Image (cartoon, rainbow, N blue to C red; front, side, top):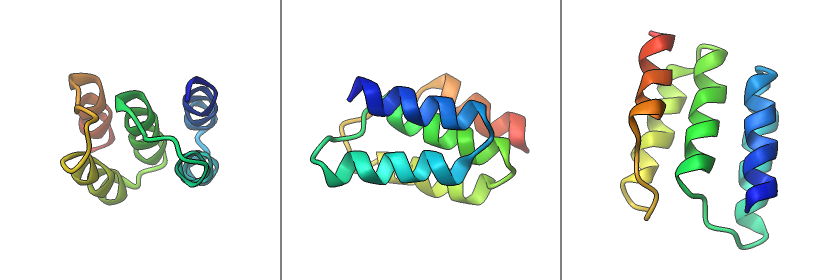
Length: 81
């Protein structure tokens, strides 16, 4: 999980939301459950490129998971607005 989270985070820092989403989906495909860091990095990636609506839909997905939303994640969204 740590390696996937790192890859998603690096993709986000490179403003490559598509790569971040690819790593996120691959992580799930091999059986890992996303945690707060996974969702946070994915939301950050989407917000960095202006895909706020998509980021909000990812945040909505966290409601059905054990991952908790954080102030840091919501700051990413607010910064993108």
